[in-house]
Image: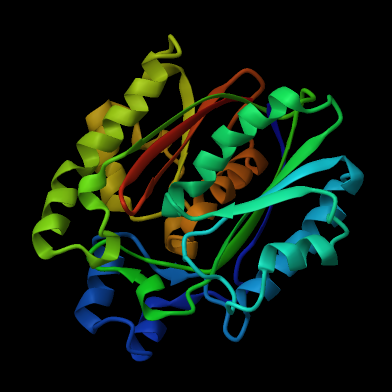
Length: 309
């Protein structure tokens, strides 16, 4: 299975932390903490833009960029963190299939692993390709917007932004080959944002060690060393945690792509793919290089995917 194309959409006018503070999303002290300790500065926020409008904009751009034959799309899978992304009377996936002439595609959406759901769908896609023809393809959609208060911040950790991303997968050799996925869920933290203070402290205490173990496990089980990983393209939760993870796995911090944390904030499941596309555009990886996508979903799901460029 190959990742052939990535299209993403972010806010053209991101909001700075002081603006969000003035809107009452967090206090001045919290804003200072997010900036000085966590490395956040600007957040991708789209005023008066619905999740559906954001998705439609991104899909239109995707089809224009990729020139994919729509008839070759066998599956359309949608990953989102929020349980609801549209009013209950709107079947958003069906509407998208109808509007973009994909009504022949088999579709479903998932949210179970929150920001790590897209990694689960990539793993499922690998299995689906077993029964697909050589020219048949899969589209993966990732989209979330911060339309309620609980979706805007993770206290003491990060500020979230609006984004949508579309991925094109195929069996035909192209840019990036999917090698392996490692996804582990720790049910002790199933309360997510509703966790007690005690649960939050426990999660923070095991976070770096657990994420480091996931990274090293997927590397080792593929007979590689951490030195052979050219880059990690992570979720954009904050700088502090990634400096700690880098130290735990003995990886130079320069090999973890962190440039977008201050530009976009944490854009749910889209982060690793936004970072990957930007990294490819910057020439950070070359043919033959191994790289990792890494993310964590509240709940809590720790996950990593290994690709070869």
